Length: 462
Ligand SMILES: Nc1nc2c(ncn2[C@@H]2O[C@H](COP(=O)(O)OP(=O)(O)OP(=O)(O)O)[C@@H](O)[C@H]2O)c(=O)[nH]1
Ligand SMILES: [Mg+2]
Image (cartoon, rainbow, N blue to C red):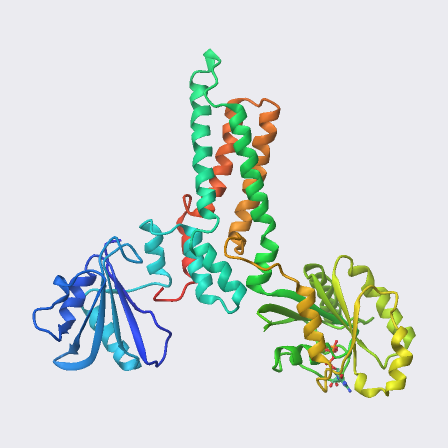
């Protein structure tokens, strides 16, 4: 890791200023060769850490820009290495010229996430904290922001690390017993081990359970828009997300595949899923779409069931027979659409439709955007996410969730093994497995593939 890397860290394009970051053993020396300080003699080599210097950068004798240089010295920097941040004017041309100068002086352009990867490898943060940096940058709602911030500041990984170390101590003791197996000694106190295993199991369970909330906050609460063909589902999706995401037509069976888009309502992210309308059809592709509708339905907690209110009661009942069995345990909102086509009197006659279905009901016109604010209100109520405060630990990352699930299986085997007096060698195997999965979360256990997958999704310059 001896090379020095550089990248433009501000968003691509023109801005008021841009920041170019340089990190590595030669960062200060290289930047010193392109920088002329305003005050003579104040070169970068003599610049103290955490200070800013004003000066100019020239290329081939021509002034490129006047810049500010912030300087950090290892190990007290983001990456843990010597670092320089060049703040220049935000012209694309200036940014490219400075980058070019750095590359000519043996700086290498950084890979996505490479600064953060170095921070991780230099022990400045653990892996789950590094991942939180990416989440923080990507956060678009108050909830996502808070969760990412918690995780970046240590979140649950500190706690997991401590328990992991305690487990490691126990396995070493148990493994030591194996060396003295003739003598029937017990170095590892089984009562304490049982207490620790229970504590770990409870923590893992709490973290794994928090994933459904964490995932909803991070990726949006999934809401399926379902119903008969031509009911106006795609019209409603377009209206909710504020753009023409799905094709709308008066032909039955227009939507064949699921279409998803997210919006933010009152700080909550919703992920709406428009689906293929339900009807009897011989069209193979449409039938695949309908199958997909039902499988999507399984994955959501909230359902918007759209009904063309001008349909006959018999028809509406026939569709209900197909849909109702799939609504168990879901928050359902019956959305009677196309109410613009009926008079108030006709509407009131239809109040009894689907009375037997346990759901909220609303009369709207998706086409005329009538009563849709009420619908948004109901959605916010239905979402009812717990308020997160800064002490809450909530898992948002599927990689962590999967590792937690595996760790839980292992620790449950340890608990079981302790109660059946399982021999030390088997016990230590299960403990080691749990240690392994906990280590995957914090980054004590990694391999190049995991690291690559994580950091490849970062922006360049972070
Ligand atoms: N009058 C009226 N027409 C509507 C309303 N909502 C949708 N429509 C019309 O109903 C037709 C079907 O709308 P879509 O949104 O494509 O219906 P869909 O439920 O997505 O249909 P499929 O994709 O075929 O399942 C279109 O011609 C829409 O313009 C409404 O509130 N009032
Ligand atoms: Mg549609």
